[in-house]
Image (cartoon, rainbow, N blue to C red; front, side, top):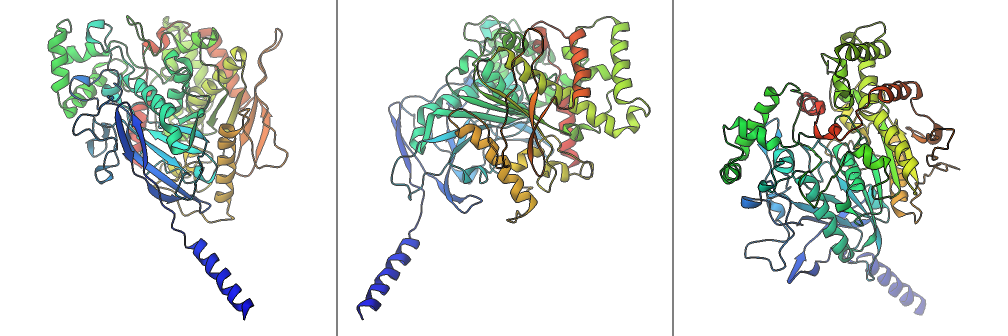
Length: 581
């Protein structure tokens, strides 16, 4: 009888333990002189562990009215009536104003971030987990921290915290005037990110995060943004390691036109010297009208391929986000020296293969110091002979894919990694991603790209985040294993005390790029992350990278003009690509 009673009690205890309700506790802390309370929603990671999502958290004063276009302003120490610390989900997800195929969408009151943490009601003690901050891509024109495309349930199967951030785009984030009277030097969107990083550093401990172990990672323009933070004194001390996926500050597709506000003034028939009237006009103009003017400028410019609103070198101010050309800053070692993972996808150009540039030199024109017509013709012919030796460009899809992959992603990634390896006291890791499964959702979602082999631009995202395009992932499948390897590599870099990326492949050791010696260039070690395995090799796509190395050795524009005069052919291309899918 005693034995039966004991068994019944034990059964009750076990049942009680399993019936424990796990919830997300409210997070409360003092911000300035205001106590804010943030509510979270319970979610489940891919290994059935619970995590909490705290979304739409305001990190800056709304950039509206007199603050439109200006550098972001921190939240006030005492919140005025009506200012919410967390925007209601009923009106979300919140995205910054941008152009979509259905028209202008989003809101100017969009400077929010999302925190995803394993700190639930089941954790009685204080966590101190590494933090990974995701910066979305979209060429500084589109995108958001919306979890529809960046649901971190895969990453949250590891012991980390993930934060995703919004930042202003297009003219709202990258209007600039050289005239200091305007107080709009440019790069407001990047400075939004700085303010978000400050908020994270100051407050992430309340969510169980370690403010001394923050990793920035991003794709496309998000990776480029992360690299700009490496180069900016304004971002010093706000992060500790960086992962750049398919984007660096040395990409030829990066950069806006400085003083682009004068072009807006001309288009509106305004006198740009009348500062007050110009500012008043810009502050009161609707977002739709601003986009109309912006799109007219694209047609009026001789380089009518993309946006003039992007990162610029700032002039005539004391607090600069970007003070000089990225190439020069890296070469002089004037940057925040942190461990970096830098990489690209093996077939990025799939996303752009429908493009038929009328002049092949246009794909890197912003980086070439060539004015003579005969020299431009020589470079044009070299590109033609290398990528289209027999078939012309129109009939050679493979040549176009290789050309865009190499010129816009592969060569800039290798070049960036090698330059940093020569100037850095920390380890620089290079990779090439060539996974090709049902997780390559961006390539497979379009009838124009789904049949090509390799990883297209953005295809790596599907291995790190669950997206609205992700198919059902079944355990013990190729896709399930591929996700395991990717999140292990990415999170081990963020978690490891020495910032060494690991892998669950047997005996895999990732060797960083070696620094150059007096008699040799840098040893280009890299990890090939394929569908089935991760393996070390040397000199990715060597023949093709060597081709561009020779072009740049002969013709690279070594001056701050490389980013001050922007060339963003990608913008028009991605707009076309989005319409096709």
